[in-house]
Amino acid sequence: MLIKWGSIVVKGSGKLGGHVFSGGPGGASVHTLARARNPQTKYQMAIRARFTLLSQGWRDLTEIQRQSWYDAESSFSRTNRFGDTVFLSGKNLYNALNAQRLLIGLPIEVIAPLPGKLPMNRVTGSLIILSQNKIFLFGEFEALTDYMVVATTSLSAGSKGFDGENRIIRVGKSSTFGEGIQDSQATYNAYVDKFGTPVMDTRIFLGTYAINSVGQRSTISMVEAEFG
Image 1 (spheres, rainbow, N blue to C red):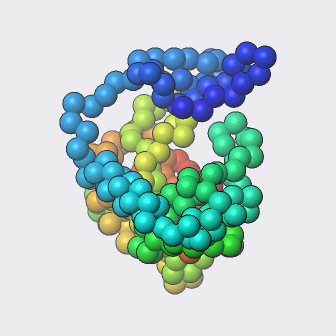
Image 2: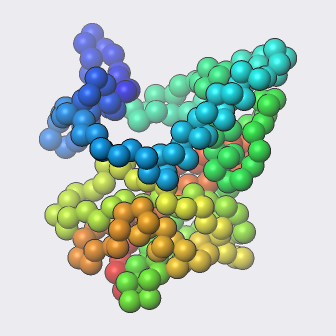
């Protein structure tokens, strides 16, 4: 749950006490959180496994190792959904950077690193070809670099946007010259595994974000896919 305080609460976003707070063109809203009967999906189980691994890892750090994360707090900042600059605590920084490293197959870092440069990440187009079971992503990427591919479910043609409701579907490597994401069939299969078959004449948004070797992540670059 993310809340921005003024003389009274002026913004809210996230979950709290069984309710979801959000905002949009029509103003702020709150609705009851609907919980799935069976939350044991592969995606959710993977998240829990990473959380357990990182929690145990933090407990196993030496005092010197843990202090390095406290000392690094001021070196890493991020912007929240309200556009405010925030800093993570040492423990949360350890969790955030290492969770991203695990996503791209890197081991857990026990000593806090220095901030690094993020790979180029700009999606310029996406094409879904249902007859070939392929989803293409085009853009400007660092060559032969791993990217997190994200997507939305099929939205109604009248929807104005996706309001940030995207999910990771796979890790994809950029092409030799960085003009796209390799293996369009793997992207399609990952989408189907997550959301089901893409529905023609609906709005689907796809994109990527980059993770560097430090564990920092870029902002998400997304576009609306075209059907071909």
